[in-house]
Amino acid sequence: MSIREIPLIIDGKKVQSKSEQWLDVLNPATQEVVARVPMATKEEVAAAVASAQKAFKKWSKVSITNRMRIMFNLQQLIREHTLELAELVTLEHGKTLPDAEGEVGRALEAIENACAITRLQMGEMANNAATGVDVYTLNKPLGVGVGITAFNFPLMLAAFMFPPAIACGNTFVLKPSEQDPSSTIRMVELALEAGVPAGVLNVVHGGADVVNQLIEADEVKAVSFIGSTPVGTHIYNHAAKHGKRAQCMMGAKNHMVIMPDANKDRAINDLLGSAFGAAGQRCMANPVTILVGEARNWLPEIVERAKLMKVGPGTQRDADLGPVVSPQAKARIIKLLDSGVEQGATLLVDGRQCEVEGYPKGNFVGPTMFSNVKTDMDIYTQEIFGPALCVLEAETLEEAIDIINANPNGNGTSLFTSSGWNARKFENDIDVGQIGINVPIPVPVAFFSFTGSRASKLGDLGPNGSQVVRFWTQTKSVTARWFEPDHQDGSDVHTTISLK
Image (tube, rainbow, N blue to C red; front, side, top):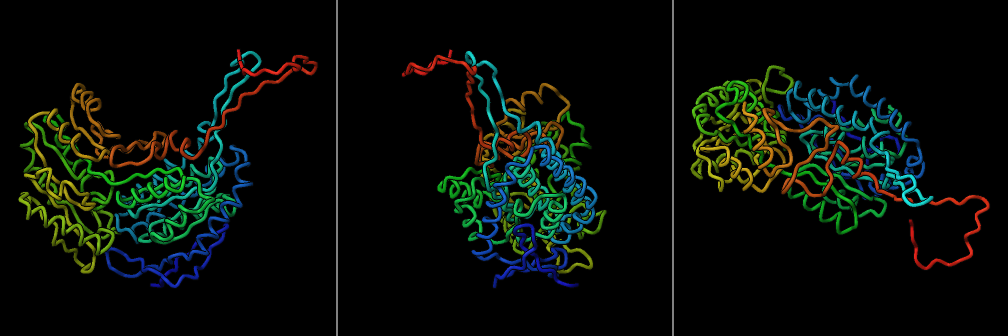
C-alpha cells in the first residue's frame, strides 16, 4: 500500500509541508501506516491565517444567497461521496462502515443547517421606534475563525464548524486531528469544488504549538473546539486571555435511566448500542446506566446480550464495534478497566483480552460491563472513552435524578419509560443540557443547537441551530433618522438626546 502524505490547504491549494516533523497515521485494525501527516511550521500556520484574513475582505461582502448556494453544492457533493468519505473514516478511525456512513449523514445535517443561512442570519427591525426613527440590527461576520476537532468524528465535527462559519461570511482555518485527517481533507477538497473561494477555508495540522499560534494570531476572532476537557479548558482560557470568542465542547459522563415500565427489548438494545457503538468513542455515548426498581432484574439479560456483540475490523459490516483508535488509547482504557476490578466493582463482561481472528495487531477492546459501581470509583469519575458500561441501581426515579445531578458533567442523559409523568419529571428536574426520552444518544437534529452544559461545555453558545449563527456573527445596532429635503429644525444645539 502506498503511503499518502497529507497536505496542508492554504489559499485554495494543496501545499506540501516543509516540516521536519511528520506523524504516521495508522489503521487501528492492522497497525499499518496508511498516511503521514505534517506538523505545520510557524510560517505555514501564519500563511494560512494571512490567506484567510486577505480573503475575508471580499468574502464578507458576498451575498448571503450566493454563500447559501455554495453550501447547497457542498451538501450535494458530500452526499455523492458518502461511501468514499466513510471508507476514509473507517480506514483511519476504525469505526464500522455503517457507523461511518451514519457520521456522514450527521455531517450532512449540519451542512443543511448552513444552507438555511438566508433566514438564520437575518436581523431585527423596529420601524418608527421613535418618531421618524428606525432601529435595526445587522448580524455581521467576525473575521477569521479557527476550528479544532477531535479524532472521534472527523467529518461531523468539522461540519459543525466551518460550514456555518463561512456561510455567515467569515473565513476559516481548520486544524483536524492528526490521528485521522484524510476524511477531513477530502471534505475540504469537496468544499473547494463546491465553490468556496481560495483563502476562505484553509487547513493546517499540528499539536499544541500550532493551536496556540492560531489562538494568539491577531487576525483570529473566534475559536471552536470539540474534544477532551483538559485541552478544551486550556483553549478556552487561552482564547479568553487573548480576547477571542470561544466555544469548547468537552468531556462527558452520560447516564441512561431505565424504568421498569420501559419497553424492555428496545431499552436493552438501545443501551448496548449507545454504550458500545463506535467502541465507546463518543462524547454522547452512555457509559453509565441506572436501573430503577424492578428493572434491576433485567441485568442478567443485558449481560447476555452484551456478550453476543460482535467485534471486528470496521470494514466488516456485520461487526457491532471496531477497534479503538490507537494502542495508546487501548492501554489507557485497559488501565481504567483494571482499576474497576481493583476498586471492587463486579466485572460482568470482560473485553480486556479481546482478540479478532486475522487481526492480531488490532486495537480491539470488547464490550465490558461492571455492576456494584460506586460513584467514587475511577471507572465512574473518569471518561473511559472505550466500550465500557457501568451499571448503577436506584429504588426510585428521584434517586436516579440525584445521582445524575451530582455528576459534574452535563452533556447528555436519557430516560427510557412509557410514562409521560416520569418523562416530564425527568426533563424538568435533571440538570443536563441534552435529554433523550426513549432516545439513547440525545444529540438533536442540526437545526437545533448542541446544548451540552456544566463541566461538558465552556462558552455560552453551542454548535448548530440558531446558536451557531450567533457565535459566528457580531450584532451591529443601527439607529437611523432621515430628514425631509427642506427640513429647517437644525439651528438649535440639543444637549439632551431624546427620541420620542
